Image (cartoon, rainbow over all chains, first blue to last red; front, side, top):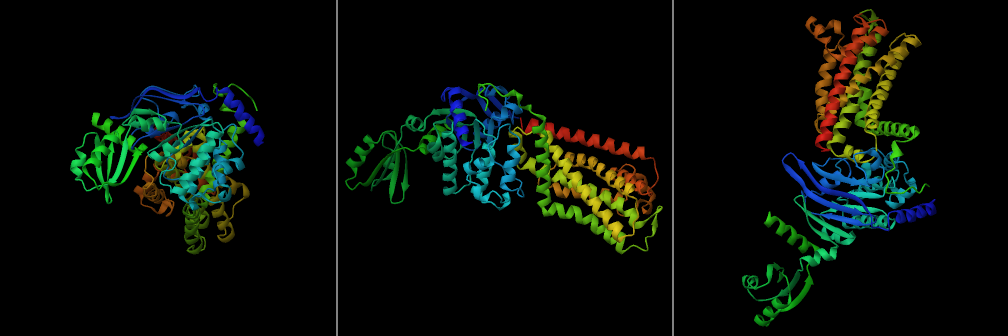
Length: 316
Length: 272
């Protein structure tokens, strides 16, 4: 059974052109809720086999984009397409899996009962054992949902997303509220999906998550896409550097140095964000003979993100 | 496994009938299990009518005093049966629907290929199943402890009438469920359900209520169901059954219309 499954995965990879074909897209899509413009003229594509992270702060439009892809909302203007069809139709959704943020799940059903019910909606669901294995639920399959921990609950929702063996999965903030351990476990399970040839769109405001999982990051803020690229490209596009050191120099003086974006206290030392580290280091070393504990790092995705959305907010 | 080109959507999905039936069956089965295991629902739905019946129909019963042509133990079976059916149907549909809508679960299901009709059918089936349970238990109590005598045919007709009568209240529950929030659902239902039951003569038999209330009762759906059920056992006001059926059917259609409005509003608002 598993061998036949792998064979099918191979055939699927070949049919979709080894990860190049566009399988889902939003074209010139806008979505308004009354006066609120949740999405503005967004162009967004997802290619087969990739894991795309849609990264943005709360209220950026990530969940709206996911709802459009799932047929839960209709675009005000523009088009949504998944596998060549409109996800409003149930037939299209037989190839889609979704993990949404939900406040309450029926608590008196057992894990395997939830999975059994959802599996029945799909024409070719995975066997129960395989679903349980993929989501790490074998040991708790007979427990009622209400008895589960936060991490376990998210894994059940994950299982419901993959039970129909969909070709594309939409995960809306899948690890929100989870502890570090549970988050790592879920990340591992998501990676396994990609290894099986699935395509994933993940929304998150956890920069670490986008960095850890994504082939491609799309940064969204206030309904518009403001940056797109691999995690490395996104980090590089704002080309930042972070300098930490212990110095007796006055902070205001350091802030006034050319090329410095921001300075703040960091315990006994200071942390400087700047475009390039060299000229600033030269100035510091010249002015402070007692400069010590010098560390220079490239700006993490966090800085890149704050810089991008900061610029975006200023420009707005 | 077929190797059809995967850029073409499998439009043949709407599917083998057997699969669709399987979905409807499983949806109903798991709805039943969910609610059965929810002590708050299953226990109160079943025990309240039984408790009232034991108290007023058996314990406080003065030698099966006649009420409108039948002994009180017999009279109270259709009466509390209607009360029980209403409760089972209203709470079974409305509170679940309000909670699942308001807290995002219905959205998860709508993101899947589940046919929405299966979801509603499951809730209605649940209302009917619990109604059947309540009525059967009431009958058993009456026959075993209340000296109630009914032919098998009559008993079957009584159960069938009351279970059919759960449909209008399932429709009512769906209508309510679309317009209340998850936290206020139970309180709202009680605010409607309890006065409605009293004014329809389900607790104190209708002939003992003031004349004005008796007239008003004709506008209340539970009154009509109770009368239909009572006529099966030879009691009640002996009005034409057609009036009662028409009232219940009309009421159901109005409720379904309201529920549909709620559904479309949700699809338009939450589902843009």
